[in-house]
Amino acid sequence: MKTLSNWHKSIAIILSASLLGGCVSMITDRFANNLSAAILNQDDPETVRDGAPAYLLLLDSLVLDAPDNPDVLRASATLYGTYATIFVSDTERSQRLATKAYQQARTAICSEHKALCANERGNPDAFREQLAALRIGDIDLLYTWGTSWAGWIQTHRNDWNAIADLPRVEQVMKRVIELDETHDWGRAHVYLGVINSQLPPSLGGKPDIGRAHFEQAINISNGRDLIAHVEFARTYARLVFDQELHDRLLNDVLTMDERVNSLILSNALAKREADKLLQTSAAYFED
Image 1 (cartoon, helix red, strand yellow):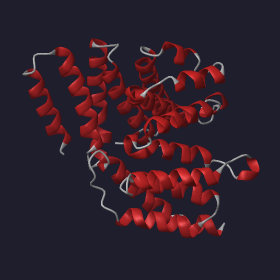
Image 2 (cartoon, rainbow, N blue to C red; image 1 turned 135 degrees about the horizontal axis):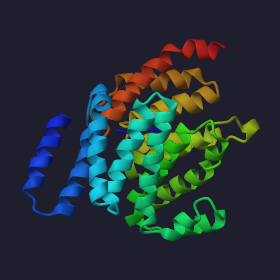
Image 3 (cartoon, one colour; image 1 turned 30 degrees about the vertical axis):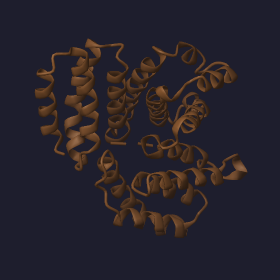
């Protein structure tokens, strides 16, 4: 459940332009947001893996300078969460970085919606009421919080206390869809597809609902967000043992153009994952 031009040149250009701007707050916001955009449009995942730590430190310096700036916190949370869940293999380190991403995203939304955060692990009805009170202007904060929370759960997947938070993340993503289901290429639907495709119906899973979410995500992006295809295959198709659907989705990914603005990195990663899943397809479905 993961997302991410020559980004080194982009950073140099952004810094140069910022130095001429004259407004510290605007410079900080623009730099943080453009840094995230440059990473999302990088077509070489190794460049991101090797270069991201330096820019994480830069974002840390921006957070120190503007600890209550929601744009800076969101940008930092997005990069920390992406790096922790995609590029870090050490469990303890990925947990630490994902926790930082979640805390930053939480700080960003809690600064404006204290009652919501007060009920994040409390009364579920009160939590739903606070979510319902959010409006379209809150969607960026809400979505970053939800994705960072999901990333935190992913890195703590052996902790049942973390898994217990999944219903709250599901509520957050449902509210995102209610506000604007096309936000971030419809990826809230991908998260809901994954959540509902974890277990077979006999154990309480809802794969049919999961499939509907995956199909809607693909429809919203016109098939351009390749991670939706990969997660559809990885979670739903493997769960219900549908090899024809599984292989068709993944073969489609391998033939599609990955160069879509803001999806270049995630599409490049999706192609790699599609190839890996196809290589294990026969063994998985024969078992």
